[in-house]
Length: 510
Image (cartoon, rainbow, N blue to C red; front, side, top):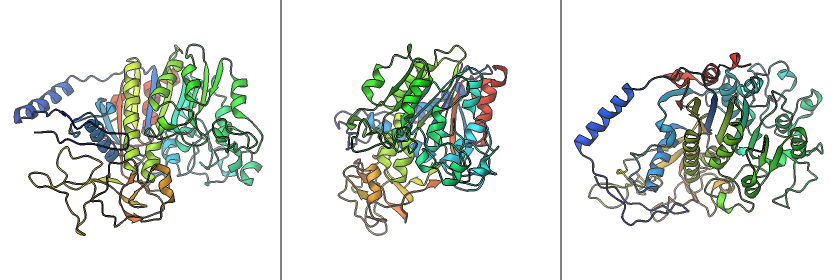
């Protein structure tokens, strides 16, 4: 077959010149299938102890997201795309994870990540507390805390780290170290009167006051405002300030708490950190979430990529001869989907793949690597586009025909769309700014002359909503290393914790 040439805009441009064709024959397909079985037959399960555990979370990374990102990455390399594999798709073991919360058919990130980290399913909106609590009620959370794998790793002498492109106090990273009945309690300004009266601590406080083992070694992400007092100007944006009402500067407290500690808030400071001389590293690169990968080069102070943060974290944590646990979250895949912007969701997924690839190269053979998602999104891939058609483009008619496939209204449509959300729009900046567009904007937009591969394009949606929602279907678990063979079939999401605990043999390492 001949690979279909493509060109993408918005920072993902490809040269249209000399994209090589890949020859395929019936024999080549047959041999590839036979070789896949031969390779599978030689696979031997690794029954040893996982000295290290690295858990990658693609927030909102459903199977349709993985498929579309796989194709996009391949097309950016000049392939048709469909034959490509993301780095984590090469891991040998695979299972499906059932993501529902105890009270919701379609889940949220707080309940799902709590299940992954504690081994116990729980309610939507709560973090590492059990399902008996009432959301937002501090008193009901007394004696309801669920011990997390990260806490147990610290108690067993392992080093621990949390890396995310979201706020460090956001639901997914928070579920590794904090316990609250309301995920919104990220700093003390968000605590209710009832929470303060009953002594509940905000999430940022819990990160800095974390007392298990010798404390968190690495915490990198966004969310700077929750660590600074509201009287302190943000170091990067002088028109912004911290959000804490208690007057505490938690970044300073981090430095005072730990020996050989460092706090950084920009790329230059991050790059200057010597992993061999730093025992505890806190990095807060934005007041709120970090930039999407596509937008990161334009950040005024500079931000490290997810891959760079993963590498630095591994360099610090691997100094511990007892091993380490590291959680890495591509948090903004989820946010781009909520905005209806497939471009950013997919480019952030590709960056997650780069981080996994880097980790697989750097990690020792006795490292368990798990890649999964907390939940999916209502993100769909459809129509009958010809092979190699730009995944961010409009559905073509294929064959000898010219022009786009037309919907019943006589207008072309894209391969990628959403079952609900704000609807199609073309914005200069894209991403979060989409929330300012009226609901259902462009639902009847004629896409014929619009570059749907542009970074500012937001896909069409069927049901008009303020924001696109999560999906309730299963997500994939990809794994390799000691204990990875325990992932199989369709499993409840909380099983991930139990695989990590058994593989790492934490109870024998205390």
